[in-house]
Image (cartoon, rainbow, N blue to C red; front, top):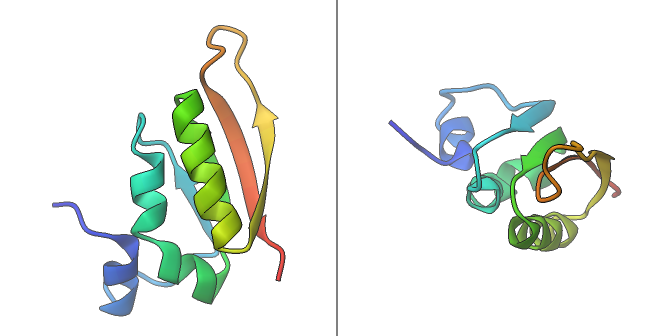
Length: 91
């Protein structure tokens, strides 16, 4: 079963998170879209593994719109198109 984080938190099926790790092999923006309400309301820190330059752009735009600042934590030498981000809410 797959459900947006916003739905799970709203229904009380999971507790509001203080940190979220995202490693979904290219679907990072989709996960963030499904958690925007949770991100804005509960302000969890994020650790995101991004697998493509286009995904990096999409994730960056979504996070910025949600009030987050992100930075590259690590870029693995074996893959120039993959990196790790940390993000936190600025407001």
